[in-house]
Image (tube, one colour):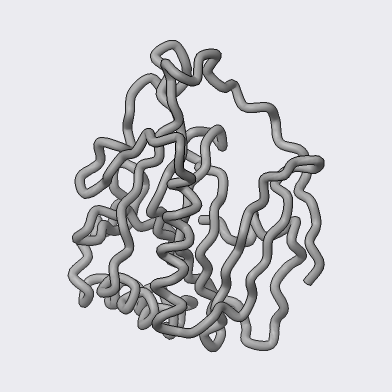
Length: 215
């Protein structure tokens, strides 16, 4: 599949002083046990919502029951990941953001979630390191991804989003970055998603992947 640029995004309202308001990466690791649980869930029939609910309960994840949680989550892993989705599973494991007392993100929300860690080390690319580490967990279990695609998030930008996708029967398991809806798409998150995708169906064009792999 050829790469294709995404439509331009609005300019982010970034802080004026990067030293006083550094970028933060909050992460909740996906360890071998959780990765194995997700691989097993990728073989379920996700058109049957009860199958996913049963699998999460059997894995020891805390369910929010008939009502969504305070952050619209449907479950929480023992490690602290909030899980979203109706006919799919959407599990963010990292966020990249900054805190600006005078801006829309006035408090460090993600870095204070139970089980989450925060880093402000701007000498390393912690966000992409988290993506690579989680993708490596699935590569160990499943082999290399069936699709490994990247494209420019914005035209004329050197920054690229990478999608690593494993096909599991009529499902797809993906490790990728995306825009975080809770910040009104101001910041990015990294996630694992399991969603239906017929075995004989191609992936959508690259410019449609952000909308395809969302919850």
